[in-house]
Amino acid sequence: MAHQWRGVVEEYRERLPVADGDPVVTLGEGGTPLVAAPALSARTGADVHLKVEGANPTGSFKDRGMTVAMSKVAATPTELVVCASTGNTSASAAAYAVRAGLRCAVVLPAGKIAAGKLAQAIVHGATLVAVDGNFDDCLRIVRELADRYPAALVNSVNPYRLQGQKTAAFEVVDALGDAPDIHVLPVGNAGNISAYWLGYNEYAGRTTAASLPGTGADLPPVATRTPRMWGVQADGAAPLVKGVAVEHPETVATAIRIGNPASWDLAEAARTDSGGRIDAVTDAQILAAQALLAAEVGVFVEPASAASVAGLLQAAELGRVPAGAQVVCTVTGNGLKDTATALGQADVEPAVIAPTLGAAVAALGL
Ligand code: AN7
Image (tube, rainbow, N blue to C red; front, side, top):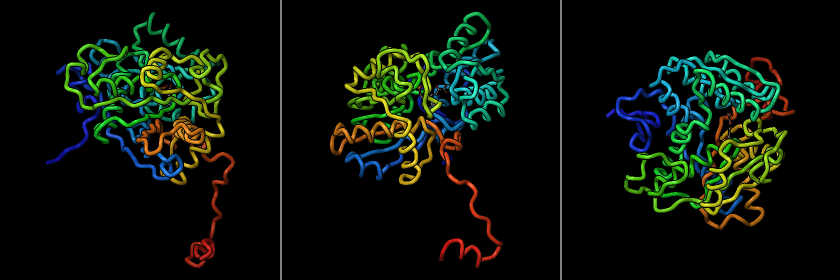
């Protein structure tokens, strides 16, 4: 019988705050591959898989939350959605607003959005506002804007975003049969680590501070345990590691260039309650992990996504990864969004040859 993945709302409806008859705004998000990473297993002595979220419709994990948040807005008279973004939220909001028939405004830090993400907001018809400031300034502006004007905020401070994003944890358990020992992911505004922790707990029959009534606590448990949550921040934007907001966050991983995460408390709870940790890695470690993923695993991710793998490799070097542990790293966004950073100084123009077999053979040194 024909079957196609239906998007996270239909696949996990009984655990989401979407009632029968509510509109569902979807692009078929979720159902992303959990890919074994033998090169990382060999390096860490663990059993490492990647949750490849760049395979979502707009190329990042943001689509999971956006389908739920946008479905909720579509059920109201509001005609405008707004968000602040380091790029991926705006790309996702713009696309889902198209599906919902809503207008979309995105407020972005000027000059700090990867070209692919900016292109997405533009082609999907969002109105762009570039701010002379960082993401934290942008979020402050859209929060006030949504308070005072008839616009719905679709950043992860909207609780429906976390509800959608928790489905990634469900998928990991569905794929592995139970929760892994350790789950590693990059942390910026700290919504995703909070959402995974929510999802893992609900699948284990427990609730957390982010649980909403009727979203799973009454259902039989699917998992017998929850993983340790390991968050990874960039050195220049590591407020959760330092314990204090960073006024001028700076990192090559522009997606996580955030100094004052909105879900600070939920992320700290995820770390503490799971027996996990939040560490920082340098830009050099991030770029090295990105290159390693591309060259040895076959997965091209954007720099922020590589932070999770950089954090895992660092932990392994420090002897913190138990031998044989089952580890899942979320790689949050597609490498195609930011090719300029990935290519760096590399020469992208191959030598041009005459259109003959002989010239091709000579060029290949065969
Ligand atoms: C690829 O798009 O904050 O800790 O405005 O794009 O849940 O914020 C993006 C964040 C990791 C961090 N990886 O997740 C935005 C935005 C990628 C990202 C994160 C982001 P959170």
